[in-house]
Image (tube, rainbow, N blue to C red; front, top):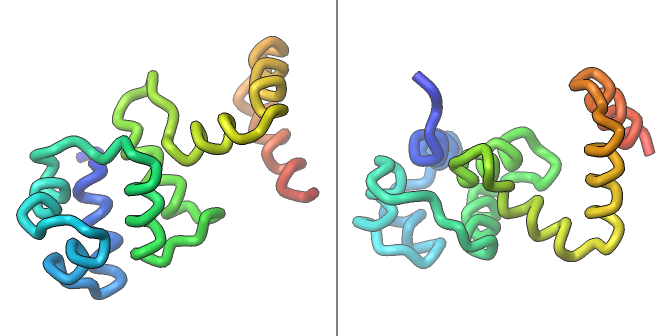
Length: 122
């Protein structure tokens, strides 16, 4: 079964030994609403600040796989970019140019992976 935002959020919360009620209070949610989120009864938050608050409360590092997966699952559709990426693109004047350049070059998946690895070395 594919992981959902809610199930992944629960997994991260339990891994950090947070109780549902105390964690909900920490991020400013009612426990009942937060429970609905973890049980996929409501959609993931679209608000970037809320997603950042959740990630920070879980003590996730911005460069970690856990951070990326949380934001990717929150995007909840292939057409919607993760909130942290949208925020970064909107704040950086060169990111749209870089993304268009990559798209126009029609790089293969392997070439994109190599580009990512090269950037990580900088």
